Amino acid sequence: MNDAFLVRSPRLRGLPPVVSASTRLLLLGSFPSAASLAAAQYYAHPRNQFWMILAALWGVDLRALPYRQRLAEVRRRGLGIWDVYASCRRDGSLDSAIEAAEPNDLASLVARLPRLGAIAHNGGESARTMRLTRTLAPEVVRLPSSSPANASWSLARKVDAWREVFARHGLCDARPLPSRSLPPSHPGAPAQPGWATARRAKGARSA
Image (cartoon, rainbow, N blue to C red; front, top):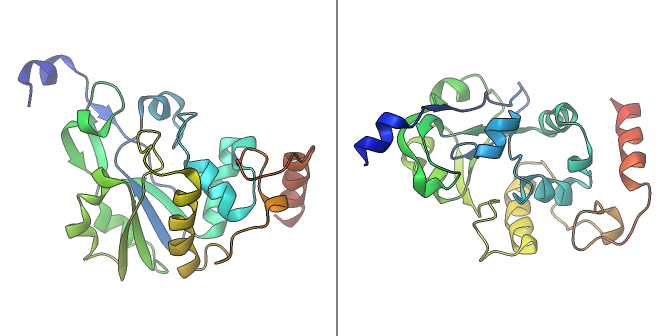
Protein backbone atom coordinates (compact mmCIF):
# COMPACT_ATOMS: atom_id res chain seq x y z
CA MET A 1 0.00 0.00 0.00
CA ASN A 2 1.35 3.43 -0.94
CA ASP A 3 1.28 5.55 2.23
CA ALA A 4 1.86 8.78 0.28
CA PHE A 5 -1.13 8.02 -1.93
CA LEU A 6 -3.34 7.38 1.11
CA VAL A 7 -2.35 10.71 2.65
CA ARG A 8 -3.18 12.80 -0.42
CA SER A 9 -6.14 10.82 -1.77
CA PRO A 10 -9.60 11.65 -0.36
CA ARG A 11 -11.70 8.84 1.01
CA LEU A 12 -14.54 7.99 -1.36
CA ARG A 13 -18.00 7.06 -0.06
CA GLY A 14 -20.31 4.63 -1.84
CA LEU A 15 -24.02 4.73 -2.64
CA PRO A 16 -26.96 3.57 -0.49
CA PRO A 17 -28.52 0.17 -1.17
CA VAL A 18 -31.43 -0.24 -3.57
CA VAL A 19 -33.70 -2.82 -1.94
CA SER A 20 -37.27 -3.46 -0.86
CA ALA A 21 -39.14 -5.96 1.28
CA SER A 22 -39.67 -8.04 -1.88
CA THR A 23 -35.96 -8.32 -2.78
CA ARG A 24 -35.18 -11.95 -3.67
CA LEU A 25 -31.77 -11.53 -5.27
CA LEU A 26 -29.13 -9.11 -3.99
CA LEU A 27 -26.51 -8.15 -6.55
CA LEU A 28 -23.24 -6.87 -5.10
CA GLY A 29 -20.63 -4.91 -6.97
CA SER A 30 -17.29 -3.84 -5.55
CA PHE A 31 -17.44 -0.03 -5.36
CA PRO A 32 -18.99 2.60 -7.65
CA SER A 33 -16.88 3.87 -10.54
CA ALA A 34 -15.83 7.51 -10.73
CA ALA A 35 -18.68 8.09 -13.20
CA SER A 36 -21.20 6.50 -10.85
CA LEU A 37 -20.03 8.57 -7.89
CA ALA A 38 -20.18 11.77 -9.95
CA ALA A 39 -23.72 10.97 -11.11
CA ALA A 40 -24.80 9.42 -7.77
CA GLN A 41 -26.14 6.51 -9.84
CA TYR A 42 -25.27 2.84 -9.94
CA TYR A 43 -23.46 1.70 -13.09
CA ALA A 44 -23.42 5.14 -14.69
CA HIS A 45 -20.36 4.52 -16.87
CA PRO A 46 -21.73 4.41 -20.45
CA ARG A 47 -19.68 1.31 -21.31
CA ASN A 48 -20.72 -0.71 -18.28
CA GLN A 49 -23.17 -3.36 -19.48
CA PHE A 50 -25.20 -3.68 -16.28
CA TRP A 51 -28.33 -1.90 -17.51
CA MET A 52 -28.00 -3.51 -20.94
CA ILE A 53 -27.92 -6.99 -19.37
CA LEU A 54 -31.04 -6.27 -17.32
CA ALA A 55 -32.74 -4.85 -20.41
CA ALA A 56 -32.06 -8.09 -22.28
CA LEU A 57 -33.45 -10.16 -19.39
CA TRP A 58 -36.57 -8.09 -18.85
CA GLY A 59 -37.33 -6.61 -22.27
CA VAL A 60 -37.37 -3.09 -20.84
CA ASP A 61 -35.14 -0.37 -22.29
CA LEU A 62 -33.84 0.71 -18.90
CA ARG A 63 -31.20 3.06 -20.25
CA ALA A 64 -33.95 5.11 -21.91
CA LEU A 65 -35.69 5.62 -18.57
CA PRO A 66 -34.91 8.24 -15.93
CA TYR A 67 -32.73 6.78 -13.20
CA ARG A 68 -35.52 6.87 -10.59
CA GLN A 69 -37.74 4.79 -12.87
CA ARG A 70 -34.93 2.29 -13.43
CA LEU A 71 -34.65 1.78 -9.68
CA ALA A 72 -38.41 1.38 -9.38
CA GLU A 73 -38.27 -1.37 -12.01
CA VAL A 74 -35.36 -3.03 -10.21
CA ARG A 75 -37.30 -3.09 -6.93
CA ARG A 76 -40.49 -4.25 -8.64
CA ARG A 77 -38.66 -7.21 -10.17
CA GLY A 78 -37.23 -8.32 -6.81
CA LEU A 79 -33.62 -7.28 -7.44
CA GLY A 80 -31.45 -5.48 -4.90
CA ILE A 81 -28.27 -3.53 -5.68
CA TRP A 82 -25.38 -2.62 -3.39
CA ASP A 83 -21.60 -2.90 -3.11
CA VAL A 84 -19.31 -4.82 -0.80
CA TYR A 85 -17.26 -1.72 0.07
CA ALA A 86 -18.70 1.29 1.87
CA SER A 87 -15.68 3.49 1.27
CA CYS A 88 -12.15 3.38 -0.06
CA ARG A 89 -9.34 5.36 -1.60
CA ARG A 90 -8.85 4.85 -5.32
CA ASP A 91 -7.15 6.53 -8.24
CA GLY A 92 -9.42 6.05 -11.24
CA SER A 93 -12.12 3.37 -11.41
CA LEU A 94 -10.32 0.02 -11.62
CA ASP A 95 -10.91 -2.49 -8.83
CA SER A 96 -7.18 -3.14 -8.77
CA ALA A 97 -6.67 0.47 -7.63
CA ILE A 98 -8.87 0.15 -4.53
CA GLU A 99 -6.96 0.87 -1.32
CA ALA A 100 -7.93 1.00 2.36
CA ALA A 101 -11.43 -0.36 1.68
CA GLU A 102 -14.01 -0.43 4.45
CA PRO A 103 -16.77 -3.06 4.06
CA ASN A 104 -20.47 -2.41 4.01
CA ASP A 105 -22.57 -3.95 6.78
CA LEU A 106 -24.02 -6.68 4.59
CA ALA A 107 -25.35 -8.69 7.52
CA SER A 108 -27.54 -5.82 8.71
CA LEU A 109 -28.93 -5.27 5.23
CA VAL A 110 -29.71 -8.96 4.68
CA ALA A 111 -31.54 -9.07 8.02
CA ARG A 112 -34.01 -6.57 6.52
CA LEU A 113 -34.74 -8.73 3.45
CA PRO A 114 -37.19 -11.47 4.49
CA ARG A 115 -37.59 -12.91 0.97
CA LEU A 116 -33.91 -12.99 0.03
CA GLY A 117 -33.00 -16.23 -1.72
CA ALA A 118 -29.55 -15.49 -3.11
CA ILE A 119 -26.62 -13.11 -3.29
CA ALA A 120 -24.85 -12.63 -6.63
CA HIS A 121 -21.41 -11.04 -6.89
CA ASN A 122 -20.86 -8.87 -9.95
CA GLY A 123 -17.24 -9.72 -10.71
CA GLY A 124 -14.14 -10.95 -8.96
CA GLU A 125 -13.40 -8.11 -6.54
CA SER A 126 -16.89 -8.35 -5.08
CA ALA A 127 -16.57 -12.15 -4.90
CA ARG A 128 -13.62 -11.80 -2.53
CA THR A 129 -16.22 -11.46 0.24
CA MET A 130 -17.93 -14.79 -0.57
CA ARG A 131 -16.68 -16.34 2.66
CA LEU A 132 -18.91 -13.85 4.48
CA THR A 133 -21.87 -13.79 2.10
CA ARG A 134 -22.14 -17.58 2.13
CA THR A 135 -23.22 -17.23 5.76
CA LEU A 136 -25.93 -14.72 4.85
CA ALA A 137 -27.99 -16.32 2.07
CA PRO A 138 -29.08 -19.82 0.96
CA GLU A 139 -27.26 -19.40 -2.36
CA VAL A 140 -24.25 -17.29 -3.28
CA VAL A 141 -22.88 -17.11 -6.84
CA ARG A 142 -20.27 -15.18 -8.79
CA LEU A 143 -21.46 -13.63 -12.03
CA PRO A 144 -19.24 -12.41 -14.87
CA SER A 145 -18.58 -8.73 -14.32
CA SER A 146 -20.65 -6.22 -16.24
CA SER A 147 -17.61 -3.92 -16.29
CA PRO A 148 -16.09 -2.89 -19.63
CA ALA A 149 -12.80 -4.22 -18.24
CA ASN A 150 -14.25 -7.74 -18.53
CA ALA A 151 -13.78 -7.85 -22.29
CA SER A 152 -13.13 -11.61 -22.43
CA TRP A 153 -16.89 -12.21 -21.99
CA SER A 154 -19.21 -11.14 -24.80
CA LEU A 155 -22.47 -9.42 -23.91
CA ALA A 156 -24.40 -12.51 -25.05
CA ARG A 157 -22.40 -14.79 -22.71
CA LYS A 158 -22.93 -12.42 -19.80
CA VAL A 159 -26.67 -12.29 -20.45
CA ASP A 160 -26.87 -16.09 -20.53
CA ALA A 161 -24.94 -16.44 -17.26
CA TRP A 162 -27.02 -13.81 -15.50
CA ARG A 163 -30.27 -15.26 -16.88
CA GLU A 164 -29.55 -18.63 -15.31
CA VAL A 165 -29.33 -17.11 -11.83
CA PHE A 166 -32.14 -14.58 -12.27
CA ALA A 167 -34.51 -17.22 -13.63
CA ARG A 168 -33.74 -19.59 -10.77
CA HIS A 169 -35.09 -16.96 -8.38
CA GLY A 170 -38.05 -15.86 -10.45
CA LEU A 171 -36.63 -12.55 -11.69
CA CYS A 172 -36.86 -13.37 -15.39
CA ASP A 173 -37.95 -16.04 -17.83
CA ALA A 174 -35.56 -18.96 -18.25
CA ARG A 175 -35.84 -18.69 -22.03
CA PRO A 176 -34.17 -15.91 -24.00
CA LEU A 177 -36.52 -13.17 -25.16
CA PRO A 178 -37.34 -13.14 -28.88
CA SER A 179 -35.34 -10.51 -30.75
CA ARG A 180 -38.45 -8.37 -31.32
CA SER A 181 -38.79 -8.00 -27.51
CA LEU A 182 -35.23 -6.76 -26.95
CA PRO A 183 -34.56 -3.05 -26.42
CA PRO A 184 -33.00 -1.27 -29.40
CA SER A 185 -29.68 -0.84 -27.55
CA HIS A 186 -29.17 -4.62 -27.44
CA PRO A 187 -26.98 -5.94 -30.29
CA GLY A 188 -29.47 -8.70 -31.13
CA ALA A 189 -32.47 -6.41 -31.47
CA PRO A 190 -33.98 -5.35 -34.79
CA ALA A 191 -34.75 -1.70 -35.43
CA GLN A 192 -37.91 -0.78 -33.54
CA PRO A 193 -38.90 2.91 -33.82
CA GLY A 194 -40.87 4.09 -30.82
CA TRP A 195 -39.97 1.01 -28.75
CA ALA A 196 -38.84 2.87 -25.62
CA THR A 197 -41.83 5.23 -25.68
CA ALA A 198 -44.28 2.36 -26.02
CA ARG A 199 -42.65 0.42 -23.23
CA ARG A 200 -42.64 3.42 -20.88
CA ALA A 201 -46.31 4.04 -21.55
CA LYS A 202 -47.15 0.41 -20.88
CA GLY A 203 -45.19 0.49 -17.64
CA ALA A 204 -46.92 3.69 -16.53
CA ARG A 205 -50.36 2.17 -17.06
CA SER A 206 -49.52 -0.92 -15.00
CA ALA A 207 -47.86 0.97 -12.15
